[in-house]
Image 1 (cartoon, rainbow over the protein chains, first blue to last red):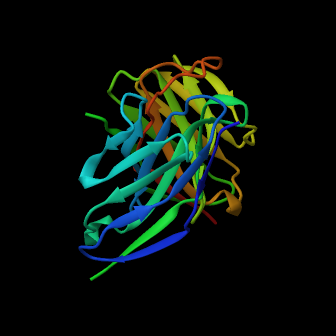
Image 2: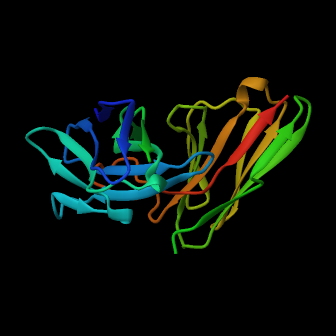
Length: 115
Length: 120
């Protein structure tokens, strides 16, 4: 069965400092993993996805994530936070509940960026 | 272009009203989805359409009625809703039709901005 656990419900950083949002996954086969961002009162925007071609995945807006099979992790990072990065971030695995078509969402991590 | 559009952006309706939400994509995607998202929660899947046919209904109450008139358009008809149905309703699409049995698919779902619904 597929599942994801976002280890932090809230992360607070200062502008210009690095961002680390942690996600662990559980999968019975090679997973499809995604990070989505949701700004206040907006829909979900795809940041990046793991396609098994490369373990280090680069996304939009300077974000990247590294797939580590040995640690079952897919943490999202950014070297330097901007105020505009303040949003809710969801780690997502495809599949779950016995259905490969489903997206199984983590509970989300709220990122706040302080000036 | 990975744009999914949704109208209206906001909707207020009474419990006896009938209203519809609309979702459109022009990316040639053959699968479309409706999700419901309550405040501070992740989205929950409601319906999946594949090749304009309803593939999945996640045990959604009949007061929600989806419709897919063509490959670009997805509607959600609302009737006799309850206040607890107030939420953000998100539409998404993906390129390939949903394969219920292929576990290796890595299809990306692209989401619209959502319709924020308030039921009074």
